Amino acid sequence: MIKLTRLDGEAFVLNAELIRYIESRPDTYVTLTTGDRLVVTEPLDEVMRRAIEYQQSKYLFPQPRRAG
Image (cartoon, rainbow, N blue to C red):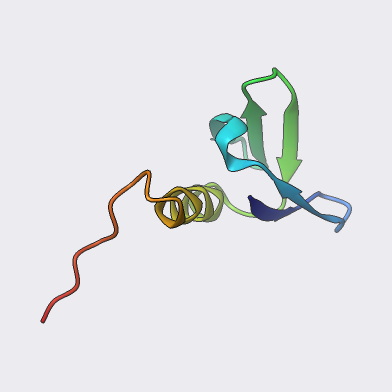
């Protein structure tokens, strides 16, 4: 789950596994596998970072290797 913000400033939590794709037009549109489309205040790169971080926390993506 990732926390995002609607254009009206309302925060909500989205199941990141439902994200089909993200677009920047210049607002950020998140299209879900259900066909629903959301517009959020976060930039595309931030939504992507949060979704990847969420997947990493579930061990679906490997954690980056740390030097040392």
